[in-house]
Amino acid sequence: MCGRFTAEYTWEQLWLLYMLPGGVQLNLRPRYNICPTTDVDTIVAGERGRTLARMRWGLIPAWWSKPLKDMRLATFNARAETVAEKPMFRDAFIKRRCLMPASGYYEWHDTPNGKQPYYFTRRDGEVMTIAALWSEWKDTSTSDGLKSCAMVVTEPNQLVAEAHDRMPVVLETEDFEQWEQGDVKDAAALMKPAGEGVLQTWPVSKRVNSSRADDDDATLIESIG
Image 1 (cartoon, one colour):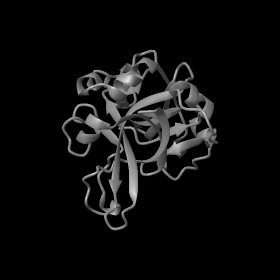
Image 2 (cartoon, rainbow, N blue to C red; image 1 turned 45 degrees about the horizontal axis):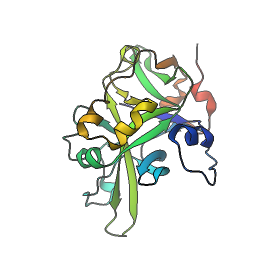
Image 3 (spheres, rainbow, N blue to C red; image 1 turned 135 degrees about the vertical axis):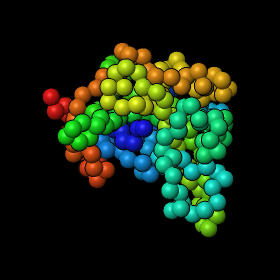
Image 4 (spheres, helix red, strand yellow; image 1 turned 60 degrees about the vertical axis):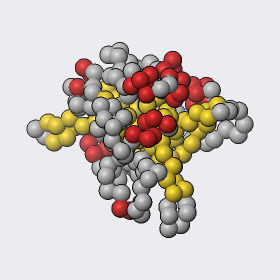
């Protein structure tokens, strides 16, 4: 599963890639250790086009009736094989699919010396777009609303399989509209491993094994050779 990723893209990159509306440019802070339950960037399509929205990474379905602190399930990843069936994700998959930009993500490979992290990013250096779902939940005790999301994961391609048995669903530009607006069959057709030439990877410091590693530390993605 994908439980950590990075975001070192600029507003201009997102504006061009997703054809966002003009106006005030946002100052996006680079982040190198994004963890579940923190706020992340998502791209949501609406009647007037796409917008950038910040959401909690870890989906809370609209029907959830307990306090947020009682959500103990890991809902930051939705498995492609079951996303259309699991009550936690089913409604969002049918009605609320979105895009999640990332610069890269981490996965861990078991070795005799412990878990070795690897960093995966696009070979062409462009922003990675991950297929995602979103939902809006209301806290009944406060009436506060909360938007949340989950990225969709699938079986790995050969490159990723050397480190891990799952990978995010990576979308290409021509796939965006099909994922956002297509019916469930159209969306399901995109939930497959990325082509072998899309990603590259290298080993990184085990410092990223800790979720408390500094989110501002750009050296977390440097190759250890």
